[in-house]
Every structure is written in structure tokens, then in C-alpha cells.
Length: 217
Image (cartoon, rainbow, N blue to C red; front, top):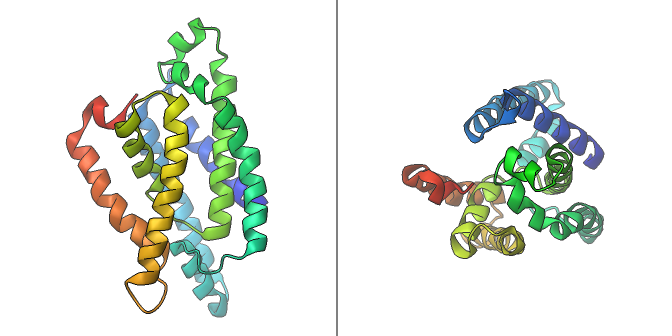
């Protein structure tokens, strides 16, 4: 499953990136819109699988889509930790290079950075980390939208500090959501429900606030 998740994760990123690319560059709004289109397409494919699958396995698929840590075990933690180290350590070591990349293609190229090569490297490594987490815990949305923006508001746009704060913030946010999911009822709610109920209002706040101050560069 992790390999399949990584392959289709790269495919979805490639499709969204290709759709958003206009006149040789990728701007923020087309990338968001193309991501929505690609997400809708894969949602249709998942719906087809749920319709055709054995009804006895449908419950586990639906539970996985909601996102949960209830089925986590130490073997899964060890395998996930190894994969995340492969994905996150290179990104953490190169995090300072995200600063010129965020300035735009022309500015980054003028500083001697191979924009296409390094962008593809960051996309591949981040896709690997995300796909491994999704394969193990299911779809837990809004974390990648909410936590980095909060971290940017706290420490500013310098990725030397922003990335470690976002990593720690994402882990803390997941612990908070899991604690809430295990505490508010007598059974474990899927963590994805908690993260969505917290992330959606925050995302609406960002949209209401708007501008570079909320979204960053």
C-alpha cells in the first residue's frame, strides 16, 4: 500500500502541477483550482471502488478514508518512521533553499538555483512523506493548510525556522486531535473529523482575511 500510495500521490501532484502551469510558470490560484479538480477526479475513482468492493470490506475502506490512529501499532510506527526520515531529513537540510524559491522563478534563477530541479525534488520528498502517512492513517485533512499558516504567523516566512516549527506544530496538532477524538465520546472518533472541524473555520478565517499577510508568498 505505501508504494501504491506514493505512485498515485506523485501522479496526482503531476496532474495538478501540469494543469496549473501557464506560460511556463505556476501561480497560486491556478494551482489551488487544479488541485480541487484532481481531487474531485480521484474522489470519483474511490467512489467507484467503494461501489464495486465486497460489502464486508466496505466498512474498513470508509473508516480509513475518515482517518484514524485507532489501528496503529509499533510495527507500523517503525516502518513509517524510516520512510519519513528518508523524506524529511533531506528537506530539513535544504530548508533554507525554500526562501529564494518562494521569491519567484526569475529571482531564484538569478541567485544560481536550478528552480525546476529543486522544486521537483521538494515535491517528490514531500509527496513521499504525505503518502506514507496517508497509507498508514488514512485521510486526515486540513493539517497541511492550517498548521503552516499558523507557524508563519508565529515565526515569519524564513524557512530555516518556519519548517521545524511547522513540523512540531503538525505533530502537536495531531496529538491534540487524537486526544479530543478519544475523549469526547465513549468510542474513538476518526481523527479526520476533528481536524476538519478545527481546520475548516480557520481556513475560512484565512480566506476572509486574505492578502499576502494570511497566505504568505
